[in-house]
Structure formats: C-alpha cells, structure tokens
Image (tube, rainbow, N blue to C red):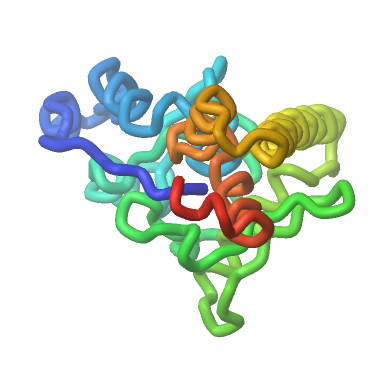
Length: 215
C-alpha cells in the first residue's frame, strides 16, 4: 500500500446518483477516475492491470444505510475482488489507513523475508497501522477456502517475481554503477505507480541505502 493522489473535483455521477432512491456509486466516470488515480492497481495488495476492479468503501456504509459514506468520493477506493472480500470483516471497519491522506510507508514495514510476507506496524500504539498491516498480510496468505488459496498464492507468486526483478537490477548496478539502463530500470521498479511498490521501496530503504535517493 502506497500513497495515492486522489483527483478532484468529485465525479459528477456521485452527485446525481446520491439523490436517487437506488443510486449507483460505481458509474463509468467514477470507475475511470479511480483506475486513473490508483494507476489501475488494487490499493491493498498493489496487483495491477485489474481484471476484476471493484469500487471499495474504505469506511463501511452498512448496506447503503449511511448514504453520505456510500457516495463520498473520499471514501471510494479501487480494489481487486480478492482484497475487497478479505477486507469485508468487522475488525477492519474504520481502522484501515486512508492512503489518499496518509503515507502508509511512513507507518508500516513491507517485507518479503525467507519466503514469507512480513507486514508490520512501525509503532505498536498505531492501531490503524496494525490493522492495515494485518489486512495486507491476510490478502497474501489467507487460505480458508479453495479460491482464496489460489488467489493468495497468485499474489504472493507475483510479488516474488517483482522482488526478483528488483534484486536482479540491484545486482546489475553493483556490477556496473554507471549503467544508465539498470538505473532506469531501478527507478521504474520503485515508482509508487509500479506493482507491489511498497515492498520494493521498503527493501531499498533497509538493504541498499545507496539507492534511497531514487525513492
């Protein structure tokens, strides 16, 4: 999870649909704005090129009972179906970091270590960071149903592939620090817009201090 810049003004359909009895918060203009703002990435797991994009409410609207939250542009996020499903647990209500307001990288460590994801709040008294870290951990590891085994494993394998790209690029730079091609690859890999950016950027900070300047 990385910081996202939300665009404004609010998509027009949210204003008009809110006045209807059975209005929709996921009209094409809303979806298009979210895909653009979130770089077609799920804001939770950061997988990209979403085949099943969903408009997710950061704070629950309780099946439409809270109309303000249901149509609040600041409460709408782009998620994949897997993460949206995992997040749909009462323990996460109102306790996930708003990545359009706060930078999750300031509050959470995102690590891949010894074949496991280690997503940990930096401060033990930061409850929202702890719950956000737990959510990110779950979407890569939850295996309480057949489909979740597959979807969690898929995301974990894709994260591994992306991290291996990072390791290979760092090896190239270690062998030739003047390689413009390798430097450009590194810069592309650690942009917030890239897939699984939080994990790659955290690795750079913790293991390759000479590259921090490119964050």
